[in-house]
Image 1: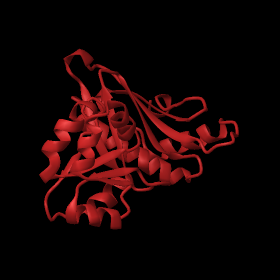
Image 2: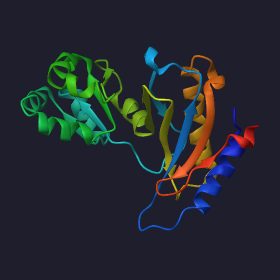
Image 3: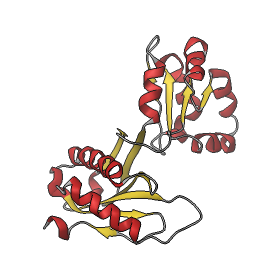
Image 4: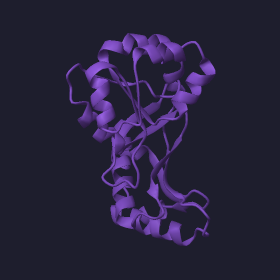
Length: 216
């Protein structure tokens, strides 16, 4: 596999090759696969906790009662109870808008059946089905972990793109994030790193920096 020091060099080059914009650009990791038959149902859908982040992911907690109260105290992006879920089920447009606002969903196991009936058909295809949180489990711990995580997802494609941070983060932090994602992806491939054709880095509006030749 490509080394972390090589990834760091690529990040530096990607930053240098990017023109200044009036917004902070994201830095992206692109992994290209090989020798995989995508027609046989190949897919990856993993939640990866990053060692360094510049901002928290938006995490919505589907819960009422004590768990809902604790989720609010722990600064969840939103807390939605069973009654509110029922209302969303009657308005698909509002439900789609609601789902797109958040990166992750956590749900009290006691209302998971309600979640399935009201939003399951919309959450499933987007790879956003809630992570169940058992009754009396520390919702604060779940929130802390998911706020520092990203979702790595690919289905029916030979490449995957994932945000590793933004251009204002230092190169070593971005490289550390990239390596955690790469290791996660490698574990989900049929033949590990042998199924990786190339690893690339780019800024949102910048060109692609390829890593294949560095690892030759």
